[in-house]
Image (cartoon, rainbow, N blue to C red; front, side, top):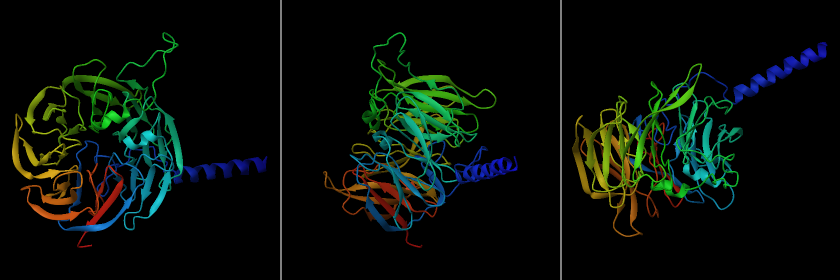
Length: 441
């Protein structure tokens, strides 16, 4: 009996140690604390901004090929650990690198759909990432923590205000998962009807990556193409949705309610996006306005509570990527086919042009740092062999502050992330990661 009791005590101690090692903490974390880039667009509202003071003079620290194409941003933990996904014919497709050296910390093999998902990182440097038919979690050493099946392939996830993981797949299934165990906190919510195997027993089950390639352009083949933006205080979150047979895509507001009876409900739908949307919705700093682009050159400002359109602005090009929206209301759209660099301000009932640089063709997406400093990738010259450069600019005037070549890079980049010490990261679609650091370091 004494031996059995001792064994139970030892087992309890080991379990406690394992739980601590896995980052066991059921209380909400300060997920979006300053110092990292923990989600695809930096924070819950998809602002593509950082509170870190931005360096106005950068130089290339290191670059390395990933081994396959990259379609989403790199995320960065508060300790500087980098995470990026890729599409590989074989071998690893989830990678982690050290910020200072570029040394590979770990790599893992997931389904090919992982290319659509930027890992999100919590306070304990556990990551959460989607691939074909599942959401998975790993610790900072790449050791698996859990894997939860879902319908479809999750586009990059978010954290909720109570510290859970909010995942939306390209096929429209919404799941809220507990960070420590992966268990569902609320019943799954389907934005689109799922096939009924009882009524249609011979109907083929759609593949989990169905239409995933179309998500990059946000067209009808990918019903939910973008990362949700979430108001952490109210639980309201926003996605784009193209319903089967609909003439245009929609902006949809849902709400996650926690507490004793957690659930996801739909609040409103606004059918305003002709051609779909290749950009992720993002929220204003006060969470009262949602910004989203259609695929016909228009930026919309939408009332977050009602879905009513406040104003529209013709950009003259279709952005491929999310705009960066600062706390003081400066909106910098991403580039598209021939899209130039410009900035807008939300004047309530209209958008006002703050400045524009028509001679600068963006080949990437912008990010803003503290100190009125912005970064984006621009194309130097014409044609497929045109040189790419990281542009550092003053966000109040658009003035060029610095320009650094991406050696031998072609095409365009798929994200701009800012590290805890002001490092600037950008991966190319062809699959090379470039890391720049401040010249003052």
